[in-house]
Length: 87
Image (cartoon, rainbow, N blue to C red):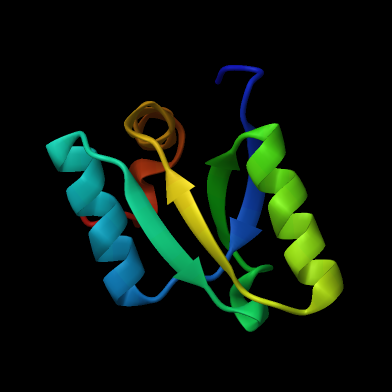
């Protein structure tokens, strides 16, 4: 894994997992709306430093976040953690 990504674990709905899988297959970016109760969970995702900082702020402020994952980020996600995604 590249050093430019940081692992963070969240909870994702089945629909969000499906959207991630489709984005990886189609080599597109995807935006996920993650609720405040889902910001910590069991599913690892790879984030940039900026995204990790935004998630940490959302956790601190007890708010949700819209998280956009780029195609390059998703390809790294596929390499490292494809097991939970419907690919």
